[in-house]
Image (cartoon, rainbow, N blue to C red; front, side, top):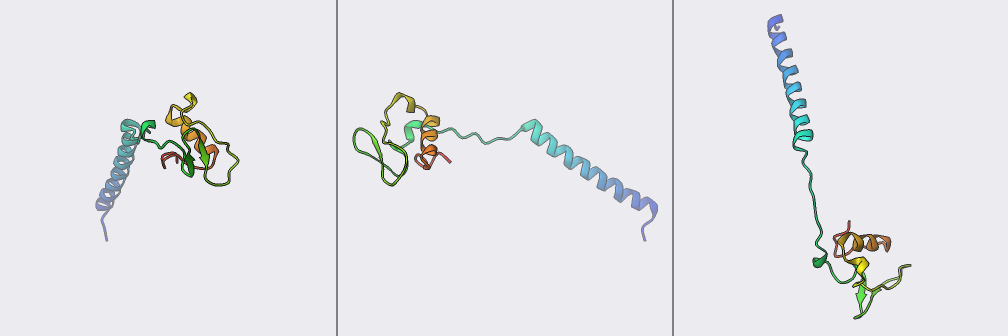
Length: 99
């Protein structure tokens, strides 16, 4: 059997360990605030979305879709976000970069 003194030491150690762990997690989350930031370089993206073919002027869907052929050099598609938005609206991705 443990004496009252030993029992209090175990309780104190347990409480301090819990408080240390919670404090460490709070500092880690709110102090360091780790985040993964991924940027997509539009120059590394293919001319057309995945599943589309470039015929020299426009991108044409290789399969059945409700999306229409489009000019991949249009000024409205000069950012990775614009390309990803278009790809998502056509239920595809662009060079595998638009999850």
